[in-house]
Structure formats: C-alpha cells, structure tokens
Image 1 (cartoon, chains in turn orange, brown):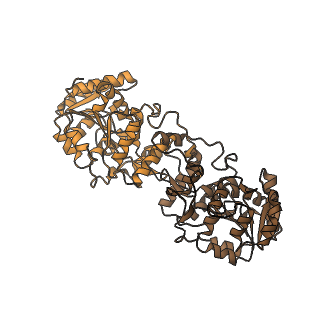
Image 2 (image 1 turned 60 degrees about the vertical axis):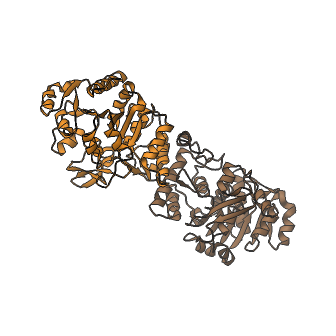
Image 3 (image 1 turned 30 degrees about the vertical axis):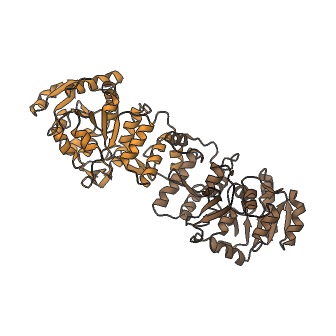
Length: 310
Length: 310
C-alpha cells in the first residue's frame, strides 16, 4: 500500500501520475479538509473534491477544480437572491455538496460519505479525509482571523499574513483508517501541495505526525516550490510569513523529522546539497507536471526514490 | 385588503388575474405549505414557489411550476450519485431551496424567508405561508401513509385513497399576520385550488377556520372542478375517496359554513340551483383560465361577487 498525503490541485495532478505507476487500488489518499467550509449552507470539501474529480476524469483541467463544462445557473440565481459570489460552485459540482450535506445532517461521517462518492464516481484509490471532525484553517491578518478560503478565493491572498491557525485541530481525531494506512504503508508520498495549509493541516491532526515517524515505509516528499515559487497558490507567501525559507530547502526543514527522501525540481538542482546537508537524500528531477507523460515520469521517480518497484 | 387562500398552479393562475384588477400591494396571499418536504436535504415549498415564480413572471407556464427555461444539471448529477429522480428540481429553482434551507437552519422562520424572497423577486402582493410550523399532508393508502408529493409526483395519484391526514396541523399555529389579514380583509377569495389538500390543509391550521367565520369581508370561492373534474390534479379523486360529491356542489358543501358566494363554471350552470339550495349565492361564469384575458375577467367577476369595486 502506498499512502499519499494530499492537498488540492498539485496533489491531484501528482496522483494522476501515481495511478499510472502503482495499481490504483493499492493507493490510499489522505486528503486535507482544513479548507472545508459551508457555502450557502452546503458543506464543501474543496481538496477532497479536487482529488475525486481529477481521479474520476471529470475535473476542469484548466481551472484544476470543479467539473469540466459545468454551468453556473444555480450560482447566478443565488447571487440574484443576494448571496456572495466569490466562491464559484457549478451546477454539477453542487450535486456533490448537496449530497454530502444531506448525509452529514443524517449523521454520516465525512469519511463514509467520501467513500460512497468514490464508489459512485468509479474511483479506485481509497480516499480518506484526514479527519471526520471539523478542522478549519484560518489566516491571522492585521484585521483578525479569516477562513483560508476567504483569504485565498475571496481576497486572492492579498492580506498580510501574521500566522496560520488550524481551528479544531487539537480536538480532532484522524478519520478511521488514517493512522493504520500510514503505519502499514510501503511508502508515504507527500504530494507537491502547500506545506502549511495543505500538508501542514494534515500534520496538525493529533496522531498523524507520530504515525509518520512510526511507519516502516519510506516517506518521500515532492517540493511544491520551483525556483522559490509554487506553480499555484500562496505557499511561498505563507512560508515567509511564518519565517521559513520559501524554497525546497525550507520545505525539507519543515518535513525533516519524518522525511526519508526529498524530490526537488531540476531548476533547484543547486539546492540539492543544502537539502542533503539536512541529512535528507535529495532527488533532482523535472517536477513540472505539464502533461500526463511528465506526471507519470515524476510518479515513477518518486516511487523509485521510495525504494519500490512496480 | 384582499386575502387569497392559495394552493399551487390553479391559485397562481387565478392570482395573475387578481393582480390585474386589484392593486397588487393590497393583496395578501395565504399559501398552503402542506406539500412542503425535504428533497435532497433541501426544504422545498412547492405551492409557495409556484405562486412566487408565477407572480414574478418567471414560472414555466407550460408546466405551471418551476422556472422557465431552467436546466437540470444538478438534478442529473444527483441521480448519477444514486438519488431518486421523481421530484424534478431545475438548477435555478434549486437556488430558492438552497437559500430557504440555509436560512431555516440559521433559525429564520418560513414566513420571514418567504418575505425576503418576495422582495428579491420584486413581487408586490404579500405572501404568507399558512404556518411556520411543519404541516405535512399525507395520503392514507392500503399500504400505509405516504407524503402527498409521493402520492402526487411520484405515484401520479395511482394509489387508492383511504383518507387524508395533515400531520402536525393540530400543533401548528398560523404564521404571523395570517389571522389578522383574514379578519381585516375586505374580501377573502378562495382560489380554484384543491379543496382537500390545498385549501383543506390551510383550513386545518387551528384558528384559520374561525377567522373565516369572523371576517367582515365576503368570502368568495371559485370551484376548481369543471364538469366534475379538475383542470389539473386529483381533487375529484380525493373528494370521492372522502365520500364527497366531486362537483361544484360538493365543494360548496365543503366550504358552506364560512362561504358567502360560490363561483362556478358555465359548464356547470345546471348546478347553480343546487348550490343556491345550500343557501350560498352562486355566480356562473367562464372559469377556464386559458389566457390572461380570461384570468382577468374571472378575477373581475369574483371581485364584483365580493361586493367590491376597483
């Protein structure tokens, strides 16, 4: 079994490659739910959905999220009824949130609901939300705490960041299967996701960090930063705000205590020595996932770095 | 002030005429909520919505319900996710239900939410749901009680009807403003709606029946049955099941104790004497609302029958 710790778009694209290399049913994805939030009274799990839609082959590849060719008729009418318009939900996409919200109100857990959606969408890898308990990533700004999606989707990362808080994390439990999957994994892959608000959020759930120490499988991370900047999202901004070096080296330091191998982009080859100085073997490769061929090649390199052959 | 007791399609079409004759802001509509039900976890108020969409000029006139030119992308995907498909909700229509459900969960009352929707849609007549408490119309069948929408929309009125129950009615209170509106009305018009599961449901809410006795305004009803059958819906079936005569006469008997004038269709002119034998003055006119001209003419006749001039 291969475990992948996953955020949103970067992780989903990485997983498209992994399923080409590893038999999909041997993959367990542990997904960040820190971005989860109610919109219009509906429970939206942005990262879980991005991963599901991508693996189901229905994602809007251009955006990286949502469903391809989706329409926005419900959303437009919600706006007409006076609702905010900054979090776009397509009509087909809404079915997922309506379905999830209905089952949550009936008392089902997020992980049970996710498993049901996975089966319905014909997705082969297991997908487990990091926790069935609410964990809400918030950004500390000069004007107060705001939800991550407000910082990200509404304000386009324009707020000054003073800190990051995972509200609810202390009380959260890993969802059923998360700890066992990590401990029993042949390898744990840390997807090229935001180290603070995607992977960091997963690590904030008590027990997950310890399980990464205890797993006998290799832990291999792919740096989401290339040339000091992420392909997408505010990873560099958040790292600098938290006084971390916004580079593959900074990421290695962040994961150092449980990491076995770091995979960095060829553009950052000059950083390999610094990474290895931290005691972490470094693999340099092309990490830019411009097409399926590159995604598969990256996955193959990472799997090999984990000491596995398929 | 004119009060109109309203069910769904028949009432909405009647109201299109009434607003041509009476200044719209002088009309208060008391709408049946016995058909309300959660679909996909969303609170749907079929009759309230039919009335709102019709008065907002956005109803699908062909169907009589839903929004004109609406699409069904969310619905199709909900079906793909394993949900039932018998209650069709369009994408734009869904915004109403998402909005309503969100505000209900936030603790707002159905009447407050309806008032907000009315304003947003630019509808001038007041619309008050009969009650803010849940009243659920159920049909007694040989296999047990089923919700009215299951009998109507799912089973297409094919079940044998043994009785009708308004679950929750005993405990329900009229929504704020309902009783005052009736008592102070210059006239109360009973729309050509189902006498059992639309008007009958409204009458089942404690206090409303009494208010109809106490109002100083004339109470004028329009028979929804023409030649012994309704234009739409199962009024005749339900009446026969409850051992009532399925005709304008049976309807007059049903409303007799609070009714001042009965309006029946010209095809039923031969029933006028029987209606008047019940002590209720009878007006015979063309009640078939085939176009706006006929709707307006009917409204004018009804208003005149109520002793009012505009």
